Length: 150
Image (cartoon, rainbow, N blue to C red; front, side, top):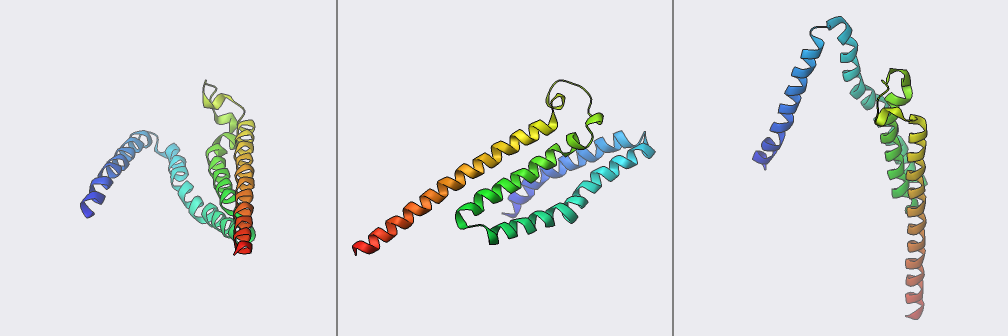
């Protein structure tokens, strides 16, 4: 088991070292300007751990306590997907002027794309929750019928 962990960790460490080398190649020639890039790279995990993770944990705990059982799982998954999609879309929503015009992902309306994707996610949450409620009621009705027969 220990050998497997080491073997699995080596490619990750190699990728990390290569990323550091690439960053130093980028940052060394333009050091004063690359300091903001260093802050951006280091600030993301700090803001995530200090702000977003505790908020997401509190919301997940609240949802687990408040929602009925058939709704819990789908709504929690929908909330996680909403947070992840917001994280991914944040750079495009925050600084649309900084995105160069080029074909592909960045040439569309980011707000419209995010809202359409979230509509699909929450529609799926609604459908799955309704299916779970129907299944829950059917199983409860079966149990009542079987108890009434015996």
